Image (tube, rainbow, N blue to C red):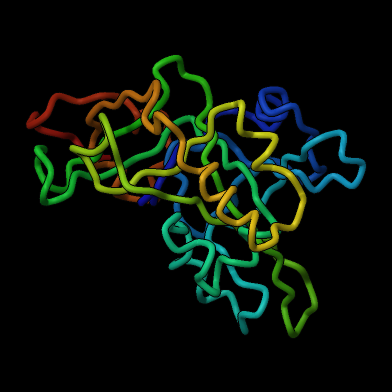
Length: 242
């Protein structure tokens, strides 16, 4: 899964990397420990002109359009690629509203079955420090009382492979640049295209360019959000929590 991540890039930097335009409210401060149900930035292809993608601010945790309230959000931060085309909460968004969720890096905690100490946090990022392009989906929900819209999103995950597998059995789907345009297409998928887009998420080298380092357990506390959270530590060394 992917339950915490870092984003230190500005909306302007994101727009430049993904050839997009910023919506007026597309701003969140740099944060190195983004948690579920917090505001995040996504890149989508919904610009009516079709010429530019958009960087938008949304809620992390997908709220289906048919939901009575937002209580599902905290349990819908990830969408498994194995069930995304069938699960009621995600299937409409997968067919119609696809996005990229940029990240500087993400955190994962070693599982009981891995080779590392259980619950040891790791920071995972691109070796060249470029932004990760996590595949995502988004949805718009209308508050039944106020009629105000809320846009929310989920990160698509897959089985871990390569260098990430010893840490955790799940990882976000990371899209290489040559797949961005197809993934961000605003076309609504018919049944024959669903399998084509699922195959798009099966990238040939899902862990290409990824590196990781152990970090302090201070990241466990969602109130800690500073850049010190991604600093490496020696495995087994005493920690000073803050």
